[in-house]
Each structure stands twice: as structure tokens, then as C-alpha cells.
Length: 287
Image (cartoon, rainbow, N blue to C red; front, side, top):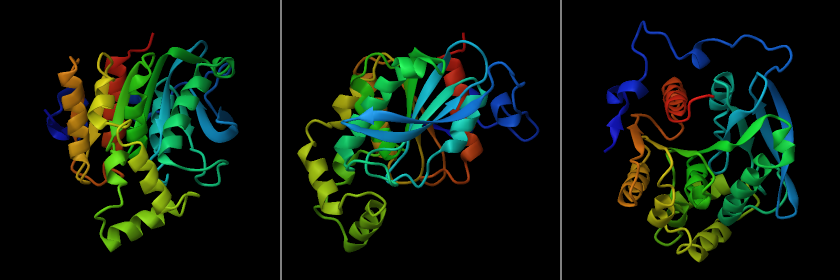
């Protein structure tokens, strides 16, 4: 059952006059020995090194970590969420994919799936351990196409949890057949920020349609905590299908929250950050 944000109880936006969660309202005390910091890293994927940002939480020891996966083509990076979660004690690895925004390699939807898996492999490597990444407490957080990649990570049994933000089923939404001229033009403009064409992306989606079965891949997330956020962007049905697939697979039931806003949550950024930070705190409490 999908919940409206204002009825989501502990996941609701604070009422007027109530304090925001600490990570949204104030900076934590500075740890001079182990300060919060932002690092530039590159993770290897299929023979190329792709740039990413690593937000390192302050404090000694290991920290739970979020793999932050942006959408197509990456106009909205959700880096405000990265900063909130960093203040809350989480490391955040915000990646690009091959062939987008100047990153090396060729862009395709299948490559974004492979890149997400490669980024997870980096987070479990000795290189990431040097930044205090706890490999047993990694949560994938994906927006739009990044939500698609997050669902495709259902086959990674070691992931601690999943957050979907207006997840888009790219296997169906990228199909070229039946598109209007306006939709194709809009998709082509988005694709222009990558080094792939609309026809290449549509062919990629068609070739992997069976492998990317939405319900089957969503069901693989069962057994881990899952937060599904939807908005009024036409993609809520994809999020609802994830919730249903997890329930059918035996749960536990995903937490579902609907916000009356657009695809980028432009007027709900505080609500979005509050919901995710509170859910992470409740589902994967800090040690």
C-alpha cells in the first residue's frame, strides 16, 4: 500500500515549528583527527576508469555507505542527499556511468547496470576500506534510471538495503515502438548528454528485455529493507510493481511513500532527504 507523505508517520515531513532531523538542520561537531571530506576517485569497469565522488563521513572507524546512482542522463545528481547522509554518518559514493558527461567508455543501459555492479565491487575493495567503508552495510540509492540500476542490483545478496526514487523501468520506457515524435525528440535531447543514440539505446533495451524483467528482478530484493519513493511523474506504477513483487516473494514488505511533486522532487527536496535519512536510521541503525 502506497502512503501519502503527510500520512507516513515516522517518515513524515516535520510539521511547522518542529525541528528538522539533525543531519538536515546542523553540522556535526568537527572531528579534527577524522574530518568529513570529499574525495575524487575512479572506479574500474570493463577496462576503463570512471569518475565518481566519495563523500566521507567524519569520525574514526568504518561507516555504513550509500552507493548513489543518478538518472538518465544525470542532470539531477542528488548531491544534496549525499551531504545530508554524510552529516548523518554515512559515506556516499556518487558515481557517473561510462559515456556520460565526458566519462570514458560507451554509454548504454546495459553498461549502467554493469557499472553499478563495478562500483559495488570498488566499495568492497581495499581501496575503499582506506576511506572507512563498511562492506557489510552498503545501501544502493537510485533515482529514475538509477532506480532501474538499483532494481537490477537485486541479485547482489550482500547489499544491506535499497532505496528507489521514482525508479524507471528502462526495459519498457526506452522502447522506441509507438513513440510520438515529441517523446522521441525529448529522449534524443536527453541522450545527447551521452555518447549513445536513441536507436542504440532502444535496441539495447529490446535486447535485454527478458533479462531485465522488472518483477523478477524486484523480487530478488526480498529479505532486505527497501524504501520505494514515488511522485506524480507517471512512474508510480513502476514503484508499485516493485512493492508488489517483493510482497509476493515473501517480503518483508517495502516501505512505500508517495510525494505530490515532480520527477526531480524540486519542491520536496527537504521532504525527500528527511524521508531517506529517517528510513536509513530506522532500518540500518548506526553501530
